[in-house]
Each structure stands twice: as structure tokens, then as C-alpha cells.
Length: 82
Image (tube, rainbow, N blue to C red; front, side, top):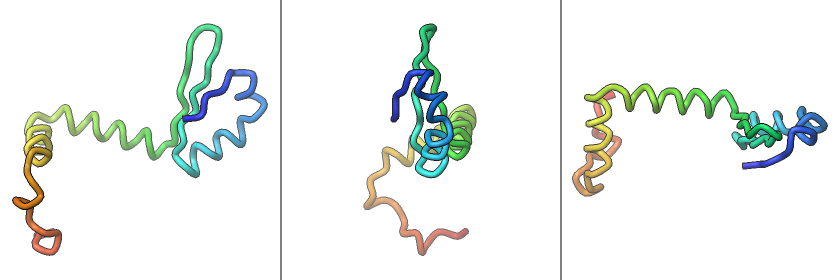
């Protein structure tokens, strides 16, 4: 994560935003009153999707169950009925 103060952010806004969009590199901007983080739209949408999926109890339980499953118990991608 790149960290800059607000003055340097203003000076380099185009390059910093381009870096954020192209490489999904968040920018932490510090001000005298606190900090803000700039994210790419792709990262933002991913976070919102994760929050949504975590809020659905059945989906959350399936994810947690899958995380606890050993790879030897999993089926191969070729066997998945898409």
C-alpha cells in the first residue's frame, strides 16, 4: 500500500490513481484529521461481494466448511457440474 500525505496526493493524483486502477495498489492518504484509503473499483466490488456473501448465513457456513475441508476430500475441477 502506498502512503502519501494529502499535499503529495494532490501533486501526483493522476499517477497515484493510475497505479491504483492498473495494479490494484491501494493509496493511504494522511491528513491532519485522519487518513483515507483509495481503492480500485475492482477491489471495492470484491470487498462488497465478500461482505454480502458473509452476511448470508447458508453461504457463510458453506465457505467455512469448505475452508476446513482437506484437499484430498475435494473433487477435481473436471468433475464439477457447471
